[in-house]
Image (cartoon, rainbow, N blue to C red; front, side, top):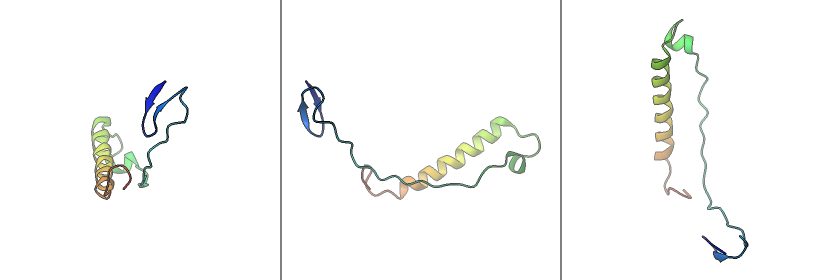
Length: 72
């Protein structure tokens, strides 16, 4: 016997648990040319910091567009 939302107590894991609905939004960014952005011999740490900061900014922008955290 197990306790599993949203359907309450179940025996032998039946009825199956239902996943919560989620709205997924993605954004495809242009490819990164390391040599073009950071020169012929790019610093790995500098490139990593710049690219992850750009990715985080994009994720923050996408998160701001969501009205309700789970279903919006």
